Image (cartoon, rainbow, N blue to C red; front, side, top):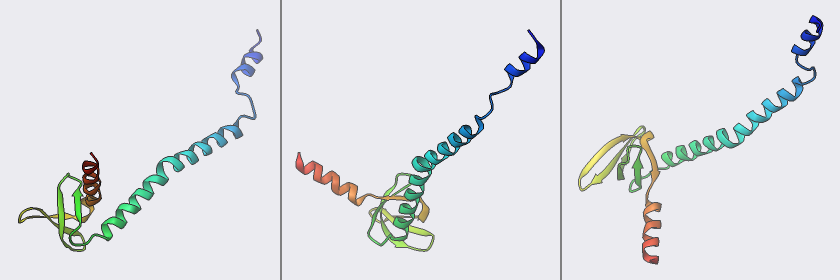
Length: 112
């Protein structure tokens, strides 16, 4: 075997570079479509929910505390937890409204 034939066998075939870059770009496009875009949409919905909070809303904090909004300030929310117990939490720790969840649970219980 000749040394020249060994060198030619070790070199990659020419012309495969364009296909590689198309696959990489397609991969990033799919990642954006299925991962980044839905996450941004969810963050915008959560921000809108937090900005539209009002007194009397039933909410859940990130720590799992259920309560009713008693007072809203720019960065904090005072929630009434049980009886006269109130907690001041950061507005960013409010993760969802549970009044619709409670309504759905009541509807399911009435159907049974």
